[in-house]
Every structure is written in C-alpha cells, then in structure tokens.
Length: 453
Image 1 (cartoon, rainbow, N blue to C red):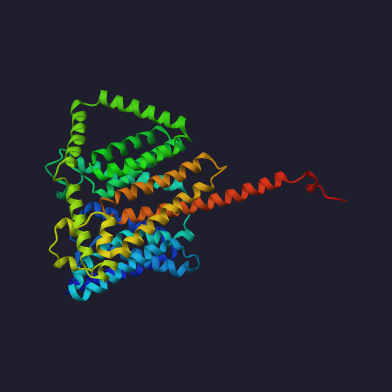
Image 2: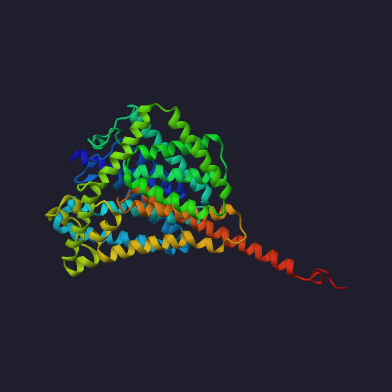
C-alpha cells in the first residue's frame, strides 16, 4: 500500500511538472514524450507495466500526457481550433463513454484494457494537430524526421541481431531462421523511412551516404519479415512512383538503374549463404500466407466472429459498442477478442458510430493531403512530388492498419502528415496570390504606371 501511494505521488508530481513545462514548450514536450515512450517500448517489449491498483503501461502514461497537453493547447489556442480534430475528439469521447459504461460492472482493470489501445492511437495525433498554430512543418523536414526515425529503429534492430541488445522472447518462432527484432509498429516506420529516403534522392539529390541509408532501410524492411509492412511499404512506394514518374522520368530512370546495378553487385559479391538466406526468408513467408492455417486466415476468421458478435448485440451496443470490459465474460476465440486491425477493432468495440467516425477522420486526412494538388499549377515540381509523398505515406499507413491496430507511432505520424499538409496548403495559397498579383501587374497598360501631370 505504501509503495502504491509513493508511486502515485511521484506520477502526479511528474505530471504537474510536465504540464508546467508544456505550457511554454508544448512541441518539445510532445517530442520528448513520444521519444521516451518509443525507447521504453523497445527496451521493455510487452512488459506488464507498473501495478498501482491497476496495471499502468508505458503507452497509458504517454496517452495521459498527450491528453493533458491537448487540454493546455485547447486553452492556449482556442481561437485557432482546427475542425479536422473533431473526429479524433469523438473517438476519444467514445472510448471514455465505453469505459464509464463498463467500470461499474467489470471493474477498473478490465474496463481499462479496451480503450487504452484507441487512446494510444488518437491522443498523439490530437496533441500534434492542436499544436498547429505554433507548428510549421514542411514536407522536406517531415521526410528528414521520418528517415532519421527509421535509421534509429534500424540501429536497434541491428544491435539485437548482433546480440548487444536482448531480443524479446515473443519474437522467437519455428518459422523464421532469422528472427524478427522489431515489432510491427516500429517496422512500418522503417518501411516508410525507405519511401522517404527515395523521395529525398529524387527531389534533393542527396550524397552517396543517403543512397546507402536508402539501401539499409530497404534491406532491413525486408529482413524484419513483417508481411503487412512489406505490403504497406510497397503500396506507398508504388503510389509515389506512379504519380511522379511523368514529372521526374529522368531521375526515376537514374534511380532504377543505380538500384539495379547495386543489387547485381550485392548478389555477385555477397556470400552464397546470405543470398540463400534471403531467398529462404521470402519463400517461407510466402508459403505461410498461402497455407490454410496462416496467421492472416486466423485473423480474418476472428474479424468475422467479432462482427457477428457485434451484430447479435443490443441496439445500443451495435451503435456505440459494448461496455468496456465485456471481453472478460466473452467466450469468443482469441482472434476475435485481441483484434489486430484498427478498422475491425473500432467496429467491434465502438460500434457503427465509431467505425463511421474513424473512416470520416481518414477521409478528412486524405482530402487535406490531396487538396493542394489541385492548386499547384505554376509551382516547382518539388511541390507536386511533396504532395504525392504525403499521399504515399498516408496510403501506406491506412494499408498497414488493415492488419494492425497501431499505437503511438502511427497516431503521431498521422498528426505529422496532417500538419505538413496544412503547411503545404498555406504555401500553395500564398504562391497563388503572389502569382495572381504578378499577372495582374503584367497585364496593366503602360499608361497606368505613368503619373499624369
């Protein structure tokens, strides 16, 4: 009991100090919370958290911090409230309503297990979007951030393969000769960093070191062996290529030739065991997907069961989902309760209303990201490619969420994509106004500039 009181006192004191600092430097505090939470999750993968009457996990503490920062930002920038955050707020409200409905029946521990996944996904996006009045983020800077994040996570993966960092027991299985060293939520960042690295090579033509970083990110994305990450990364990369090839044909051809030559050199110079290992990794993963008892088939069966259970519920539960904690009394399969897909998870636990709001949020993000493309006439090619990059990142994120529910990293990335799209939109309007003024001045007759005596 004494230890619990001390831990609560420390957490409350740290929270108050964090909020005080966040009032003056909200952006730095958001970055610090995100970085510390990611680092601790890497070091203590799937830990049981801290018990203070209820288990508190790392993502729970980060979600509470993001909620507190969001409240401060609402007070500070209430006159600049972005409408795009409304779906995010509604999802958080649905999670709170679900928790309040289940708290009295199932208790704090059980009722808190359900909404924590949705809160860890929505709260970082909310905080970043509310920071918009004091946050200027262009596409190139976002791309650099993503690439550096991917390189840092890649370093963690390499250290685990080298034995310098412990590899979680959860990653060990009989299917893979080369074990996974990163969870899927971190692996997708590596894949998106690979897309970002290609964008930087196309637009900014970085040095050979950045070429090497692109190769490392692509190779690690493959070696981590998360098939959903492969598909999501391929979808984003294909979108970037198809939408920008006509704008940058020479650079794409040069990039393809360089990548082809590098791949041939690797196949010739690399040891035979390395080539065979790569071939075996690809073959084993493809065969696993094609088998009747694949993990994807297991998940789809769970999705169907969860949807059927929802449709057989009371009308109120169908609309806003069952009370949080009801999963404890369910006799459903593990796949239908521990749902990986963000879409099916929201539908099963927050009903038709939650699912509709989630799709509305993603639709608003897609519209915001693609909207500047209609007003980029006359601007440099890099602006077109930057818009397409945001579309590619968003597409890869939405494809990834078909197989996983996503946590703090995915919610943060959605918020950052939105902030970069907003900045891109503002820059587009400013450029259009400047061009229209120049055009108007050029069309005036010469006599209009001559002062009459």
